[in-house]
Length: 416
Image (cartoon, rainbow, N blue to C red):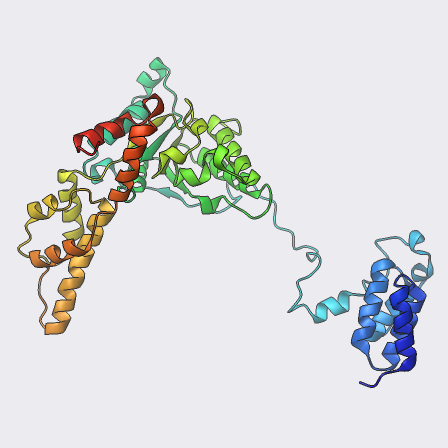
């Protein structure tokens, strides 16, 4: 594009006097006359940013965008301070914004695009479920089941005794132990046993990038549980949501922890009939305030399945697979420290070996003991790293006997 000496001189002058609107608009007009619309729009935009009601700038913008300039009206000729805002001239950037709508998001939400006001239970979509799992479906865990019976199930089944002893249908219990040992499945079984609704909450259901939204999300989730009482509210990975505040550097996460404490206390609503079950692999990372009486005041250790439970889990995962000549007791004896998830993976791996052999030979065969023996060489128990960490906690961080049940288990296993 050829250079125009006058335009160059005016541009240099404008660089020295950027707030000179008449000079800027004069330059924009010359740029339009010279077919340099893009540069003209940039200058007119800066002029409108300084004086949105400037009639000359509005006319130049309309001309630059290729739309006819509107005829001057009484409202348009008034000084900016005298123009009524609702009946003012059309937004000079509206056509420009419409032209670039596929690239640049709108500056303001269109009229009538506001969300409908929320009412009743339809404020958000939650996965409030009805669980069909029962405690009888949970293999082993007799000590855990007994603790749950005392805390929740017994008082619910005996309302007269509950009223006589003043037992409230509110409270919380924290399940802790190595990963893959059935804490989530156990929570669903409690809901099914009680005939209660089940609502699972994880960190992704709560966290939001905008300030205050995470606390609001947490409150709305608790409100959903209160509306559906009796309800089991399951807080998965509670160490992420309620990490020790002394170790949290983010002010937003500390505020979220405070909101969780308020919800558990019932300060934001009545928690009668809301049974809070939390699960974590690292209870030593959970804020001690969450374990205060009246909140998650009871801790239950969920251990790797014992021999009886391992046999039940293996039978469950092999029940619909073609098997032959399986020595179940031999497999049970070889899977000490295996979690329920490890046992499921063991059966899956054995099935893969048998299927691969069938594909290779062209003859379909059953899953046999040799497949499980081969799988045992590949699958390792995932609980051992956790047990190593738990051993250090039991030895050096068992203040007030919080982890006495863990100490007892490690001593029985001669790991302590």
